[in-house]
Length: 274
Image 1 (cartoon, rainbow, N blue to C red):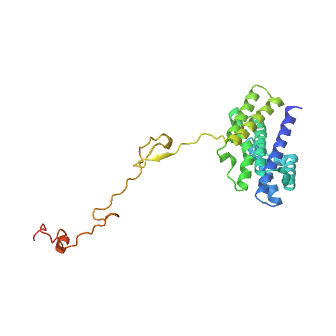
Image 2 (image 1 turned 180 degrees about the vertical axis):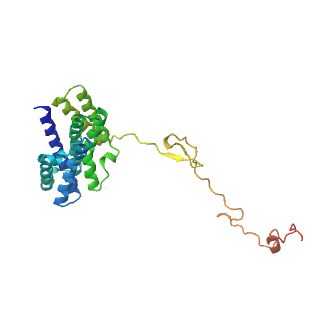
Image 3 (image 1 turned 90 degrees about the vertical axis):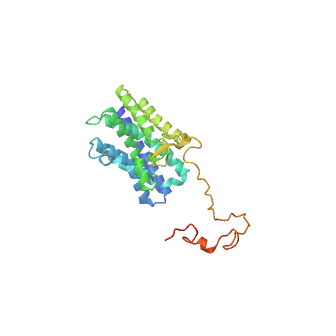
């Protein structure tokens, strides 16, 4: 088996895997038969169509080669009828998505490197990554879910690492099937471990605003007792009675209570004379 046949088999396998993943998501969302097939079709061929348009392969292989479309439709219909035997749907989607991510990352990177107008290695890595994440992104958007690529678990990073390995092997003239299979296996393993152990890329630390409105130190590094401090208790007004004070206040006119005139403004002995 030469590299061309291996690439075609890997591409069609990725189409089938992503079709099952998309159709499973449609079943999970209680879509009808057409909706399930449509989501599976878009998930299976969306990344490849984007790749072909970028590398100027017109028409895209999804429409130029009947095997791609037929594989996507058949896999989606099979998922619609056999979904009770797939076990836990969510876990199935995650596993198949990782497999499709690995396969499309390898094939997308290789096709970019061997395009009629060859793409440099760095650009080919990003095209391979976008080929891998494109189908899952379309599937999640169609089913109303937050795309996996935008969640905290490592997703696109795993694809980018695998694409870099493929580009390095191509630079070393290693086009054999086994090294490329190992590169795809690396993507799959990284993605599944990230899901299992909830690995995530670094995130920005939250900051708090200072008294002037400008950010100060991050919350994790802020020393205890520094700003912002808890609000102090507001003292009661001087003329307010405390809850435990049962003494009666002197009435106006009584000894020590003053007169009613003194309580009026401008009527006391210190009032200014005209």
